[in-house]
Length: 422
Ligand SMILES: [Zn+2]
Image (spheres, rainbow, N blue to C red):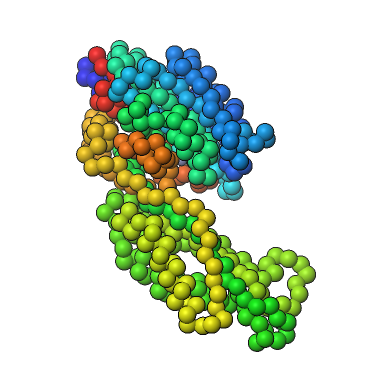
């Protein structure tokens, strides 16, 4: 029997275990923000790994401000094979976004219906974590021997930037490149696709400053709201078309996200939401923007372009004044061309699916950036069960067939990478 067949059959036999582990994880509502029940989820995963023979350690991000007695940030890592190379690290985030409205099933029950497993965090990405755990067991059950080593981690706060999760573990040297050759993050990117990176993120706030006056004589003041509206309109008519004209070479999906983009996240000013209102010209208004920049653009140019637009608008009218504040920056990352990790997964997908894999890049961002930039581990991809479009949606679910097949692909990739062998 071929290796693909053996691993596929073992993955099929693990179907119930895959569902059961996913369901147990989904039933712990690790909602972030604020970051609830991380300890319970980390302990569940830790127990599972210990049962399978891993050396398990827990890593609370003790010096991070978001690590509080009420919401402790607990990460877990299991190690198998004591750092013998080749070493593969499989990482999944433990957190899920809030359930939100519009569900037709209980979001944290883990209900199976029509061979689909429903619940917040099924696709993004507790099924992926279950697939990582079981992929290793599938390889062992198929009679293969561990030739290298495996690390499996469950980490916190990916949905809010990952600073107390993967970033912290990399900064502390707990995840590091001398002991890890390859990283697979089983995020839901469709199980026949390999995700090789993401665009950059630049969040910034622009504050428009005006001059207060009596609302019955607005001509005596300067409305910060008008100034901000002017800026938003110029962004829409001048900057947006320019951004739309820029296309990255990275295979970002969907197509619309292959361009540079800019979203206005929020806008506020004057006496918004406060009762009762007083008759005043607004002297302050602010907006938060989410600029997604391309590898080819780079952060410095993306920021300079905003500064330049602000400077131009101010130069045209002496009463106009803006200040710019950086809120968050993540640089784009891309797995190197010719990465052996991509090649191994590519062969594994072709083996299991009988068709070539497609390479994609994420429209958003995920923990890849921390592994690459802070951990120095360049051979990193996202590959896992679940479809991208269902992440963060009501009635989020993962097809059980996808879960089984992605597990087989991951097991086969571990063999292709030399972690398991005859
Ligand atoms: Zn995710």
